[in-house]
Image (cartoon, rainbow, N blue to C red; front, side, top):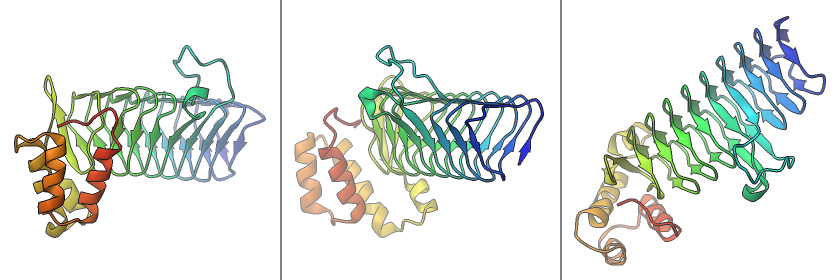
Length: 258
């Protein structure tokens, strides 16, 4: 175990012998740090916080701290961070609350760029990219491979679907469809399927074209949502991706961005 002499480690913290704790880091009681996780310098960790293996924490990030929720009364909620994540400078990750399941969770292989804020009860799945300054309100869900551009603000209780790309500076107030490119100027709009991102992850034309046609019916055919869904089911092959898109729409009580 490599612990710099200036680091402050609570005796109740559980640090893997293979972890590395850099200069001026503070690791509080109830924190678990897995093997080959590195805290470069000036990292602040507060429990109950569980961190997996092979994560990299850059200076001045704070994880597991008390949420900015006036309803929080000190309940023993927690934060979990999986394996292989990169947490860049000044990222803030707050623990969960009783009203949101008591858990803030980040999965595996995610990149959180500088100044990202992860509020209480946010659930981030796997291999997402969250660019500089992205701000999540409480209770947001971000699904696998989502890519959220810089300085986006995500309203509480919103859900960002798998493989979605959210354009920089977007204000997101409703759910973001999986596989979509979604961005806002003054109003968020869907611009079709996230073709390049899907191709990079191995999706072929037979998977992407039905999605592109589904988005055209949803957003460009002057149909209401019920009419568009009926046309999609009548005219397009029921691929796994189209099925997931339809299920996502039907499970969006807050509505979704068109």
